[in-house]
Length: 503
Image 1 (cartoon, one colour):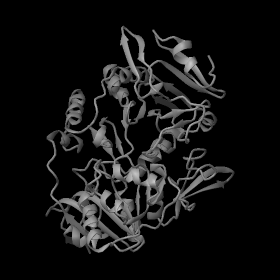
Image 2: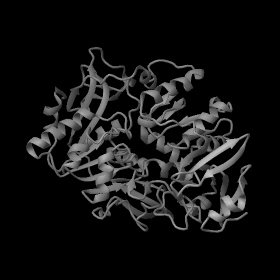
Image 3: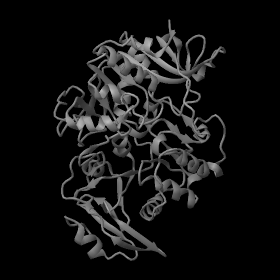
Image 4: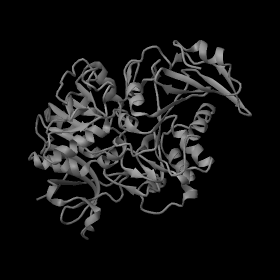
């Protein structure tokens, strides 16, 4: 039977050595007060310690002094197993300093492993990850020199087919954020942007005789309608009521609590950008890439669009009239509507449906998308892509590997060079005003996030759209298929490549 407690009291349910699973998505829906209660207790008692934390999509809030950053920094955590570290500025620096073990697994594979554990199955089979960095025949999922545990991913063959087998430690504590708890302890997510893995996490933890702690905005007397109660009260041990922080009114658009007409999606997105620290995206380079990439959209496509430069595809799909003829999806579980970015990536304006994250990755892993638009840090001569690790920085693979593994058309949106690149465009004529200092097409990439060999075997169409040209993946490597007006093919492209391409 659940109890209503303060955060500091609830955290006493956590013991040294526990495996905590956090339900959040990059920077949204993180139970921040529960994390900060752990930090307060750790500062007083040096406990709980020797923790392992598992999170499909990471659990930061873009602030190194809030949420879990403090107790991770001071040594309470021995291991992190995450799909993405992007919203955790302090933590993602410390993991490169070998301060604790850190493992990076594809977001969807962690989600499926959690669901498997909830059903009493040790792990989950997947074709996602074959021939990229997590494949144990290559690097494995360890991020730093301390991370040598090889139990999380194994290469296996079943009925003559290759798979990776993903397994996570037994979960013993769930940290969840919901909207409300009714008098029976049932938890709803009505004002949340997503529900993520919440139910599977709770089921797995209770099967392991652990503790489920839920932070909610309020208590309600009226019982929840059955289909609105994501977590039944019988799975909950502690409910912590924390009045939500005051937010900009525009963010209510992300909860789905009122209908937003299609013609207002763009204006609401602009309001949310203004309310967050999201960067402006109306630059010349972004517009060139976004416009060309958006030309790959077809009527009735089911689509995923990544963060960064790919976000410009959404803007140009709006301009060219395709946005109301396609269905956009986000890893967090939303289908339809207009995904937002920046601090609130994972939330959607006007979503048609928001379901469990594991179900979204069922769609992605089995080729349910028609096209996806992803960013890239580096591309090599074979067409392999590094999208998760740069010099001195580590964000993580997130859902990238799941999304690109089987989608029929994969479009990488990237600049030809980085750091200082300046481009102008006048009447469709593109001019490179200043070349970037860092090449993005390289002989050998640091690590593989996307396998060109697998893509060719799968028969996928793969494009690399830049601000000056477009390449296509072939069995022989990259083929230059478009050069934009104003660009000198030899001087601006061929001479700057460290390898030969097909013309």
